[in-house]
Length: 119
Image 1 (cartoon, rainbow, N blue to C red):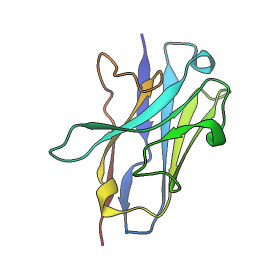
Image 2: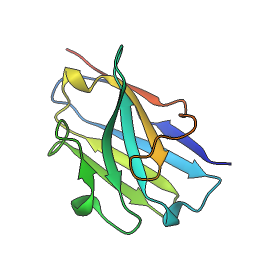
Image 3: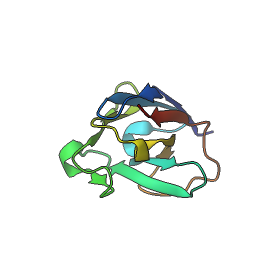
């Protein structure tokens, strides 16, 4: 059973930074692409970033809204996906989710981690 547990969210001021983590279990993490998505209040799901099996941050995909500010990475030894978020903006306020696969909507989203950016 696929389990993805997101953590690392919290409150930050505009211009600040946060690092999100996603601990995976129930499948072979190193054999799967992974993605981050978010849902802002009152809005639908937005894909944020995706990373292939053997790629690094340089080969990853990013939404235009986060390009140059967010960096996705993975540690296959720890079955963990990361999202480093820098120069945060109020528009980044959302619940962030990780997903197995590259921009593939899962049957069910995890609990996510809340990110709130405000001054």
